[in-house]
Image (cartoon, rainbow over all chains, first blue to last red; front, side, top):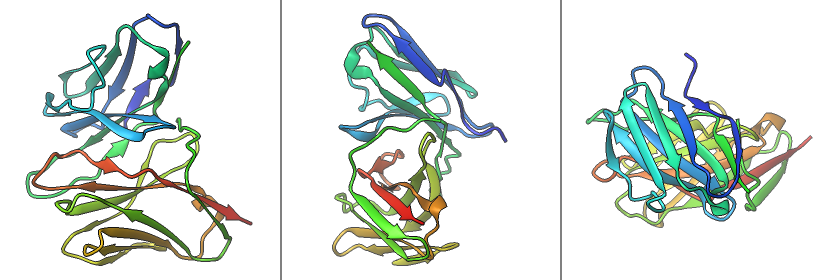
Length: 116
Length: 113
């Protein structure tokens, strides 16, 4: 099992540019999570999907951020336009959600975003 | 993988000693807790979990203790090894609430050889 795959691993862009981060969850998992990690705020949830449907996007900082999950094996997190304060490490995680139990989340390696 | 250089509380221990990492949670409705380990340059990795109907759970070299009265969680690592050096996060969830985890701020464990 390849685990959760994220791309790119590093992204450096200029303020105002569009940034797209990509995630491939573990095959068979039906829940996908996007997190952001910064020095100031630690690890915080941005949005999560269940069966490709966004369930909770209350963590998305503002309208510049959007996320999609067109199918069970792919998700994107887009920032448009990007700002220097968006600089962080963005993690994607997936899990196999079951109604009757809790489920471990498996994290990808992260994408380090730097907005100049 | 990636990580960030968080300014975190740091616990420094000698190799072979036992380590205890503490975590306070705020949501009294939380009934599921996980400890994650994040090594430099990697994403968080599951260590051990515990449900609220338990107060202790043991894994390989790790033990998690849960005190619901004071909303406190601890992770004990026996015979700490250099490979245990990492940032440790506790996370909480409520089965009846949102399915996503809420993470604590983390503790950096440094193991001195």
